[in-house]
Length: 509
Image (spheres, rainbow, N blue to C red):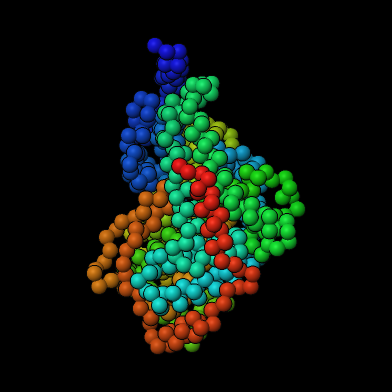
């Protein structure tokens, strides 16, 4: 038997003995199998649904194992508040990242994406939402792809000052391809060290899997460098358009950022920000099919506040509480990010008599919380009235037991881009509802199917009927089509097509 085989057997034996010595059962949870833990119960299934079923069996605070690694799962609003709010200093780090790097990244994102600074991106959202109306009026059957174009174009415009004219652009497709590849290679359970973590201590010649991890990390960094490097070059030459990345490069301490960390911000925004907004708009169209009464109330409010002679504007937002409530209910009902980005403990803790070690991974199951009938009565129904102010005539006190949701995360680590995301949703949803009726397609209601994205749950492609509401809307949208002009300085994202395709040729799979 070769030396390598004997070495692996020896290390595995030590690991098994360590597993027996360390014991298990820190919390109630599925028992699992030796060495692999609960992987066989998770493989090929939607993780959030399995974790929600386990929450019904074991309670709102339990653990499961992937290999030797125990993961803690929190599934209720009460537990969210206790751990991520009251004990936020202990539970708001991230696994596998430096706390300092994580704080620095969040600080930059919050500085540029929140508060008054977020308003610099309103012209892009304004323009793209008008383009949605024009495109839907011309080709209503393309609503599913138009939602993707809108979201991708808004994100790209804000980040790089470039937009997509069509829904079949090269760049968004390649971003999706690289995200899926990244997840397939680096998702939990895809590595032998997830099951046998002690193998990670083997020297490099005995650990060939490290080469694959390094290859995937380098590929991810190289791909998103295409976008960062072009903007960095334009910024240095003084010809960069006003956008998030240009403002980031103008930050006083940007010189302290490594190339890897700088590109990481680009990757985070392009990979996460785009997908969540696309999914939100898709869920909106699906909700419009199955809950038409909610959409009719929103249209009634729009007609009373805005009228039929102009489009909804940003200034109308404070006077459209039902539209705002509809967006909040959309976040809760869809739970499109069903599991918040995992948290990690910065120190050991004890919760409900259970020891939670330092560095433990803690998962917030927001899907389970959003669908808990004790917190959100009739959770399967789309009822915006649950988020209306108490003095609103359409307020439903029976349903308004908790007027908040966790779509943007829990505790102090909520998504820093939530203001920008909500603004994107408000302007496009209010205008689509103002201009169009959305109904079940002549072929009948769609089946409930979701996409296979690992981090975001979105409706699979479906059909519906999208028609202009009346002659007023038809005339106004026609005028928009004749006068629609991109904001000054906004370029076509096709300038990145050649760069991306060159990268693909140089980096074959």
